[in-house]
Image 1 (cartoon, rainbow, N blue to C red):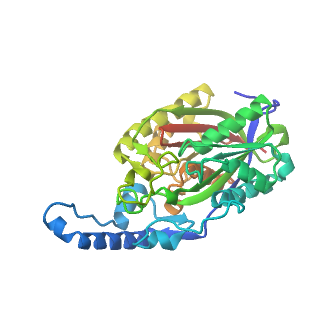
Image 2: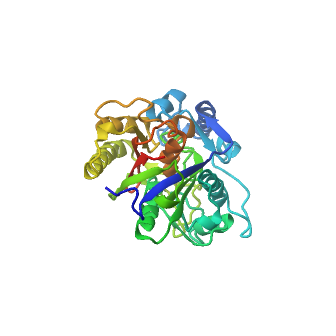
Length: 379
């Protein structure tokens, strides 16, 4: 294990969070979805009666909460998502001279992290935009965020789906450890409402929009109240069970006819069955390598995708069913925010821990991908 006093030791100095002002409750979402179902079934009534088309099934608040634990989600564009004729986010396209919407929310989260650590642009060496929903292939979102913040350094984008933030934290920590940087911003702007098929009953409730930022620094620069990064571990295993085929080499409109695979699709039961044991074992193996008793972890800040997955992973790690204090959730009010989820949980639920308390930031998702960041509170 690294010596926190040794130069080149990476820490988390601060985090930042941007939350959109608009929120959609399950009740609102179900009313919109069921109206769409009624319209579609009425339009296809003859074919449904003839057995040529299968009738669509309505959603319900009870179904959503039992399947996921989600009760609401924040979005950047509410009215179009709830409009049965649209059911997708909409906003005016911005010119190349304007700050893009993804960069805009990323900058807001980054500025909060910098302010909390007492940093200005001259103190930061690099910006990593680590997210699953990039606005464009190039120029990099990270470089746009870097320019908007006034940082003289470098930046690049990285996408490992829901694990992007933890992969970004390890990448930033590696820069610190190697001496190639002393202060790195990992920014995760996630407008996941754009890749969600709001007309799919099995997934229309899953995602929400948000942006987070994590300031990773060399310990000598860090404020007194910081989090020592004790160790990080990443893992990927290829799977098609979570997939999105939309991209610049496949440009069909993601909202067009026959384009369901250009949006988020998943085999939920397979994901649950395969990801839970993989992530739990990754955590246990890394804890053993770091000589950390997993049952002594004060808090788990897990990826916010599914309440059942988190409950089972936490139980396998801690040896008992975790309570809300041991494994806090933000899933109920934020929904699944992809790579930002575990960072939101950490940002909102760490101030009450004491010096020396050890915890785990962990993400997992498409790829499959999983990342662990073991931390200890200093100060």
